[in-house]
Image (cartoon, rainbow, N blue to C red; front, side):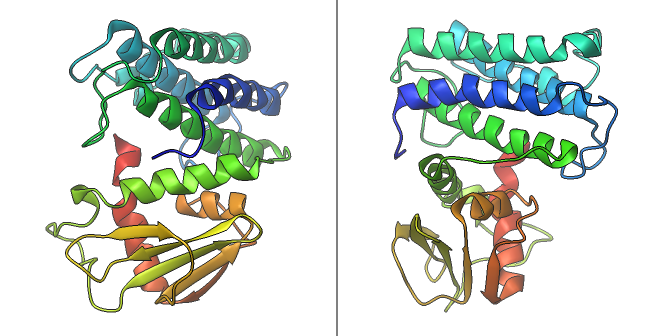
Length: 259
């Protein structure tokens, strides 16, 4: 269950998008985005704008099944948008999504890619954090300062942990190592913002807020911990223990980023 309100997520979609647009204003759109290999800044903006428009269509139409998402990952879909207009186009899409979510309310039934969450509340939270992480990409690429409210970063960590318990994140798959096992656990300590414990010693992962002795422990600022989960640079995070387990867990739990 999310720790922030639906209205807060709707606000953050627009606010984080405006900050992202500010990070890239005046920048060379062909500049590479190192945290998204193969992308440049213009590609990043088209991806985020495509994400927002995809989610907006799901919400606006009250879709009861998957909606085509070519605009999210196919760079040709929005290739006709002039690079100089991308910032305004991006903000317009975020504003439309936030308005559509508010009009629908948090409990409207819609399709989602999640196993057990089928309301607009899912999209408000997911798109808020999707925008946050890609704002970090833009900041890294342009040298802009990236700051995030602690409660928003902590909620992003908890969203990740919730995804980490679904079957696709841990069930055996060909070509992948077994994730679950005796003594396998992770602890995340966000300085001044909270702690989370992930237990892999069972028939499925579980997580809780709080401390526990773990096979691998991570400690650092809450925003850096969130960025590490998304495989973004997080040099302020200290990692101790079984780094192979951490890498495996990050790989398995990151499956949903491709949805």
